[in-house]
Length: 393
Image (cartoon, rainbow, N blue to C red):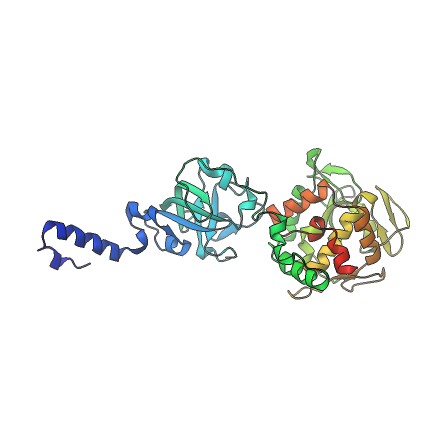
């Protein structure tokens, strides 16, 4: 900045010129105390990591745990959030790591408020490295949305999810039926966080927790409440049952349909083996350790209390996996001889079970937890069972 020609001016003009020069040299109000008056983008904040005070707005991506690691599910603490200029950002280099101090954790910590992910927040604090990464530390104000709230007392986050609720989540499907509804729902629910097969263990311990005993999970077919820690491969352990049998489409347990928690449930190892990869239908002999379940050579019938759950999981898989993202096009049909084809039956029975056994509190909570804490998407047939008949008749 060249101020040589100004030094001969009168005092009043000198002050005005210096102020003008500073404004030109440091645009957008990001110097010293003036920086908090203008809201910066995340990109601007990342370019200004020099200890100045600033106000920054961005979308919550997840919880930073290392320089290049940001959790988007299975959050472990309330101490930090990563924000970005785009809600769908995946590059950590374009994220700002925001420290969440004790005063703000009840509202802005992701362990306590997993539904915060995807929402816009504004924070005022010191622009300096955090986790050896561009950051904002020691916040003096945090608020939802693009406006700042200078009060040091945060208010609770409204609503159970990152949107206004299921109605907003399905806004693009409103008023549609048949194929148009199917297309709209696929576009909505295919946007999800994908889990590893190891992460599924932790997810199921949360999504299928026994309401009467938080140390246990409820097994799908058996109905038994069992310790969360007794998971594994032993005869009386519980393992991960693929309700849409993974051999029907041969997708295995790789990240994708093989790890989608919307159709994975805890089940006794031996009962899981009895079901195997059979299609669903009525009839057969009783299943040991699973009262109310029946099986024969080519089909499996779940107990009455979860018949609708099974149906809605199968229908979810058919809508989510349409063959446009590298995975098989899954579809229910009316056969029980599907082999390794990406088909699973019996559709007429599944539709009847959906009508017979509507979603209960356990299933609705499960759907909500998957949306909030694990995958960010919902099973539309839990929220709207009537859509099954609209699509499949």
